[in-house]
Image: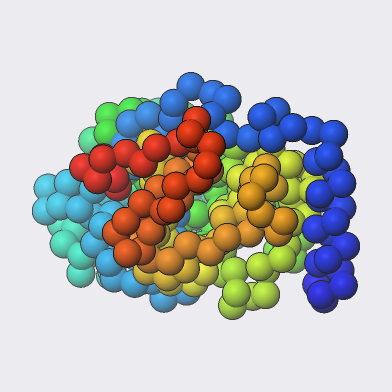
Length: 304
């Protein structure tokens, strides 16, 4: 999108919101946590070559050397896709000892508790990259999906890279079989482990940084997360810590910004529910805002 097109889109977003208050669209109108899982953790990574710290953090949160990790490579074009093998290698380098692969192309098979049984003992699940429609076509609203939710409720962790990251959100981006289409009417529902959110990946490498505005124009209640290659967010509750590289946050309910895009650097922590930065890359809370009713940063011991 050129500069003129982006300016027109931003104006359209602003006018479209003029009749809708940020209280109606915005944060803190739901039980806590609003976005992330009540228990456990989520890691969403942006594709490409990931910082080893991302895999290390995943393994650490899954239990370290005692972690029992299941890799799901179904997003790949074929079993044993490149990203799936890369994930196995990197997870082993990060200290994973107990590692199992779970894969099918059949929704009926995915709906069998016997197929999903390896998830009963798992402490972490990693979705490798490919195409997100392959994941939701097979696993959405099946017994496997239910087992994944139970894993989080036990305090486990679910991570995904590239397509695997987009599928973790409630609103599925690029769910069509043609990846250039950011909103696919036939598939717009993700697994919902991150609620009221849309996640895009390969953001700058594929020139996608302005495409989230189209999504928010149609679905203004959503919070958009744009992941650069090599970057990730680690989400516990509603708190998301950036690691590996810069991450974009899109929020058209933010009254403080005309263009609803902010960039977060590695080390910064963002509250996905309150839609506010709570810790900057300097390790300090951001400058206070005049409204005393706004969110107060939590103690550092509660940060992911």
